Image (cartoon, rainbow over all chains, first blue to last red):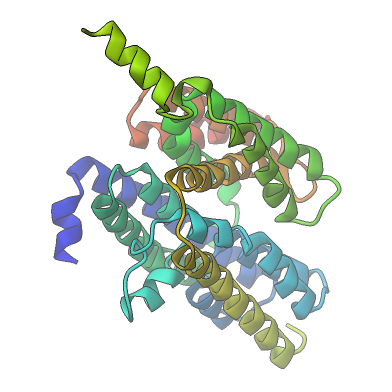
Length: 241
Length: 107
């Protein structure tokens, strides 16, 4: 734990704190919505601890409240959460912890902890950022859900405060540095277009997965960085006598 | 709430399945040795997923359009982030612009 504070600079820690605060606010609205749709408090409380993935929990509560079967709601939620598989593939080994620590580190995998980890330059700082943000969300999401459920109707209309705009803004702010690369930006725009085009027709979660197809735009490396092959190396050697 | 047992079963399924997704990507990654290019592609894939997530959560609600207020807030946040504004300013601006537009009657 102590190494997290030593490894990350103040600015990154402050950013992580803010992202966790945003998670707390969304948790407030989740708890309030769940209780207002007729669930006892223990449902959002238990889900926020055990599932720890906001969008799928909102969806679960919404489907069941609308009269849907809880099993169908769980499957819909799983579809939304399937993006955690490619997240696990993207994280360097060791970031989520080793041995027993990894049990908790795996549970702490979410959009925010992954994006903060990816933004860090080296494995040590990736691990520290992942854990700082992951543990923050482990505390803030259930905390928000329970408090939201307790104060219920008082926070029901969170849309008036624009809190629903915070999640996409947090993620966007963190991937913007990747989008400065033209090829990455092109792929990201294609991904957004694919997901948006699919939204009216596919169940929640699938459009985002389908957007992964945009990776194909990146398969071909630009000629300049393709291979430090023998020819360019010789040419370079020749030009600097 | 209708049937507590069924709701608990649904919650258990969602929790266990989500944990399995979180674990399986890592296990796959640990099992195969990847060339550096593949590693970069996997990181890019995560960024692409996140970009799609930004687009869908900013612009849609359920299967339809979210209304103008939220994407406007996220757009302002995006411009600020592009111009390297502090993270705090970016996130507050998103909420503030969206709230202000709603106050003015823009959904």
